[in-house]
Amino acid sequence: MISMASRSRVADLMTAGGRASGMTATATFAAGCFWGVEASFRQIKGVLSTRVGYIGGTTDHPTYHEVCTGRTGHAEAVEITHDPAVVTYQELLDVFWSIHDPTQLNRQGPDTGTNYRSAIFYHSPGQKQLAEESKERLQGSGRFGSRRIVTEIVPAGIFWPAEEYHQQYFEKQGRSGCHL
Figure 1 (cartoon, helix red, strand yellow):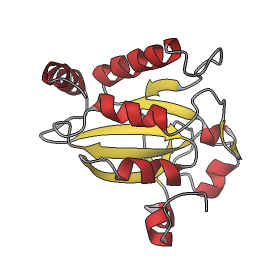
Figure 2 (figure 1 turned 30 degrees about the horizontal axis):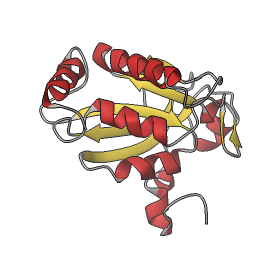
Figure 3 (figure 1 turned 90 degrees about the vertical axis):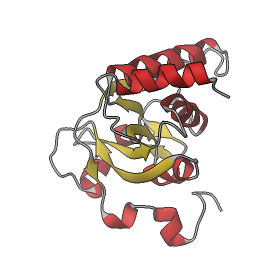
């Protein structure tokens, strides 16, 4: 549980040049196939909306099929709009680290390629600082033994929403995850 003082510090860091406005803020994470990542974040109280898409590449308006070739440089990612008074960026980072293996380079489970890389796309200097601190803490925790965390921490660029059929995919399919 995060103390009120920590929440205040997180809120200050979030709004310091970031995209927090009024009662909402934006966070963007890549942790493998965006369907499962989105489903995990949608369950969190304080997450107001999510959308899956592509970020970190060189092609404008990429399609799923283009991104899957690995030639666009994009990662499959989830853009999250949240209420920082209910769920802090630090708490979102904690979820991010818990839902994938950040030591796997360009893969998660059976999915391989740069589009499945682990990345935090920060929207403010405060988010960058919190992301770097959380990565250092996790690396030092021993949770992954001698394996190094390969998660990129990079500025958020243009987020290109994925095709509509990818949005809230598991909900549309009546499924809760990738595994049966």
